Structures are given as structure tokens and as C-alpha cells.
Length: 179
Image (cartoon, rainbow, N blue to C red; front, side):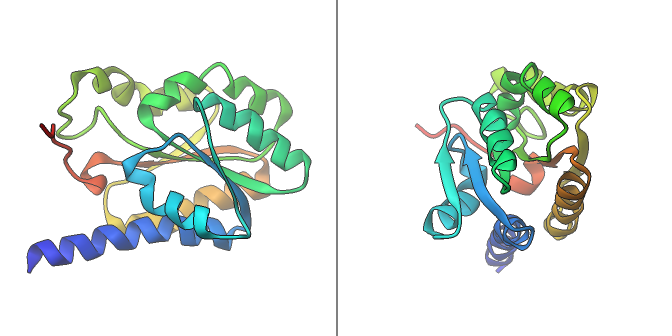
């Protein structure tokens, strides 16, 4: 019974990510494939009103979203914390051009991480984003996802700010090596 409740709760926050992006009129969702974002990615791919774009590397998404903004449309970058490291230099584009940049980051190198290679960037993600002028919030409970993402989207799209919601590994669930 508890497992069924946990699964329903997990699904609700994942649906919330897509629902809040739609409520904020996001027309472009760009991403490097990630299991933590799989629901939002699947829903974006099925939605005819959204351009769903698979990236080769995360920093490409920042330039893509700058172009979407210049074209009068809103977008969001879905990425994993390890991909934040790839974006640090490219975040200067947002600092100089002051366009809305909304990121949703699934955390690795966080609680119960099995892969030691994820730890350095996972531990540095929020501080790195803050040093580049990105406003950050962290969700570790399912009920926090929708209101925090709404606030981040509001600040990005109404204030031409760079914002990121960090989805903690406790929220996503413990990952294990599969043989």
C-alpha cells in the first residue's frame, strides 16, 4: 500500500512539472534525456503546441532558449545536475542579454548517490548556479514542486531572470546499479 502511495505521489510531481510549464505558456522544452524528467519529456513530445528538442549537450539549450525568446516564445531547459557544469560559461549569455531562462534540474551527487562521479558537480550545482547569477530553489517533497516551479517561472518570464528549480534526489528516488 505504501509503495502504491509513493508511486502515485512520485507521478504527481512529475506531472506537475509539465503542467506548470504549460500554465506559463512554455512553447519550447529542450533537454538531454534523463529518467528524472521522463514524464515531462514524454508529455512535451506528445503535445502539438510544444517544440520538444533533444540536445547533444546542455549548454546548447541556453542558446536555443535565447533564440526562442528573440522569436517571442518561452522555453525551459530540463537537465541533470551534472549538465549544469557544462553550462557555466554559456550562462554568461543570459547575464549579458538578460533574457528569461528557466531551468529544471534533477539532482545527482545528492542523497544516496551510488555513482561517485556524480558527487563533485552534484555538490557544487547550486553554488555554481548562484555564482553565475541564477536564482535557485530546491524541492525535496512532491508538494513543493508545483509552487516552487511556478515561482521560478514567474520570476524568469516576468523579470528576464535566470532561475532554476533543483529537484532533489530524495524526491526522485534512490538510484541503484542494475546488472
